[in-house]
Amino acid sequence: MKPLERLSNFLTKIPRPSKRVLLLILTVATITIIISTLLSMFLSNFDDLYVPSLGTIRVRYVEVYGGNLTFNNGNITLDWGTIYPGMSINRSFYVQSKSNIKTKLIIKYGNWTFLNSQNQPVTGNLSAYMNLTSPQNGTIMNPNEKIYVTLTLSASSSPNFVNELVTKDVQGFSFDIYIYPSEI
Image (cartoon, rainbow, N blue to C red):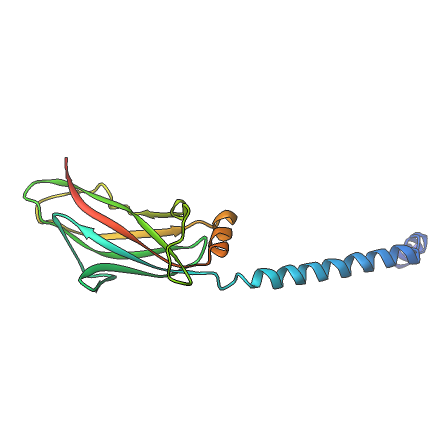
């Protein structure tokens, strides 16, 4: 028996699906397409969910300059631009020690303020979903030494965070970054 004949014999032995089975398959496929389309349309409404942000730098016994720093109304600031949930953004600048002894560089953050579309502060613990890190935090610096510092701001992708942003109508935020030396 030739391969083509064997295939033909095999195919004739497969039971033909009933009209009910074909209708069920068609119905399930149609419902799946409709649900996935509606879900995509719903999620696309959050596609432009973003939060503009600004960090004000507070320094003590160090000087900061260059890189992504800007000066705004007498304050040294970092414009983080637009941050989306689940995103990280880097900003860099120079830090120069003004100490006459060897110190450890300390970088901390706090004083978060989230604002709604009426430019009013939003209550809650939204800052728990934000994080600022720097590989240079804790770096030992010699007197008058300058180093290039990179800060990374990360926003959580947690569904709870996204829900808070939407329900509280968060349109932006600001926070302070503290940079200072510590004795070793």
